[in-house]
Amino acid sequence: MNNPLTIHEQPPDRMLAGALAHLAQHMESGCRRSAYLSAMLLEQIASNPTTSDHLRQHTRQLIDILERDPIESAFSNVPAGIHAPPRQIVLHCP
Image 1 (cartoon, rainbow, N blue to C red):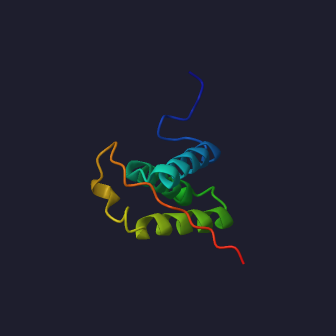
Image 2: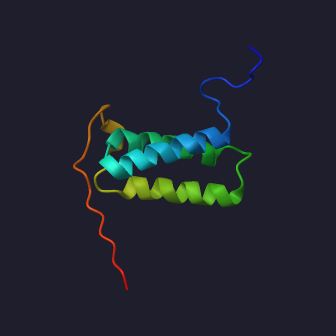
C-alpha cells in the first residue's frame, strides 16, 4: 500500500470528523465512551504540530469541557457501552 498513514496516524480533518461524530453521540445519548473517544481524538489534534493555533485553542477548550462534565469526569474508567441517562436540553429564549 502506498498510504504513508497508519491506523493511528490519520489526517487532522479525518480525526476532527471522528471527534465531532463522537461528541454528537455523547450529546444525544450521554454515552461516556463517546465522550472519552471525542476527547482522545481532540487531544491528538491539539498535539499535532501542524494544527493551527486557532484550532488548537478550540480543541483544548472542548477537551476541558468534556473533562469538567460531572457525568464524564472519570471517563478513564468507563467500560465500552455504558450510557448515562439522556440529558434534557432547555433553551432559554429572550
